[in-house]
Length: 301
Image 1 (tube, rainbow, N blue to C red):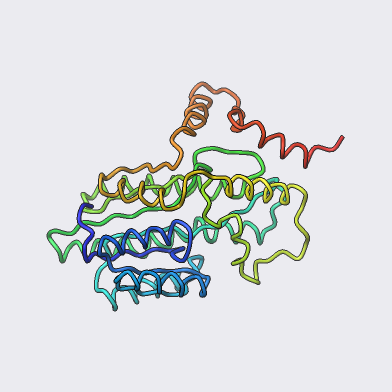
Image 2: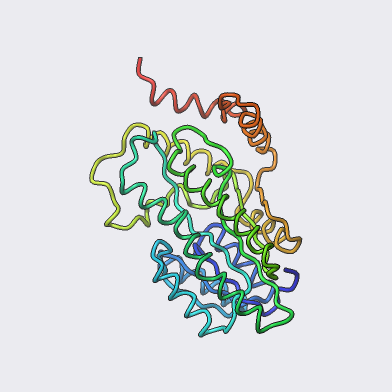
């Protein structure tokens, strides 16, 4: 996708973090923007900022866990702008802890947003984009799914998040292959950021009441939160930089998008573990201080 002027971009999780920065670049490129988020105050603020830049903006409160709300977002997009060219399935939440300590509510919340949100986005918007392509001989489209380096690695005490993001990587790779198979004028990318200050470590603020736990967090969940808070807040790569990398990948039809390419050494090691049937290597080998933080919190003498 090379031309962005007057094209329509749909962004879930569009009120903050990567989503907000995607919107900022889209506004500068002259795009029409559709923002979806569950946090109304942040959504209103970002909408006003983008309109202040001269962009046409449709902002809707939307819980991507729910297929009917994603469908309503698509219907409103077509009614307002009449087309869809660029979709960012970006909404995401974070959660951790020892994998056997996560409650059913934890799994339903994290998989609901991180995985089902992407599934609903792909199922709802891809057919719309294909229809738009039939009507426009010069149509160009692209879909970006936000995963994580946690979709390529399996760090301990992050199982629920790892599972959700591995599934997004698989879904995205399959989407790419399916679009190529039918020779669609639609590209696909998967964004795999590492630790970037986006607010995801505080995503519990938007956890729905029906999926909140009555029990206090376990020691492992508290430790996961502490590690996440420290790692994310100390990240040196900004959300704005990641948004720049993402638009560059869209322009150049590049599938894998990384915020921290140096972390790919751990991915290569994992792939070698699989191919050589070696037991899984330590994903914290390059950052032993993180493992020590976890051990100090969890290992009882």
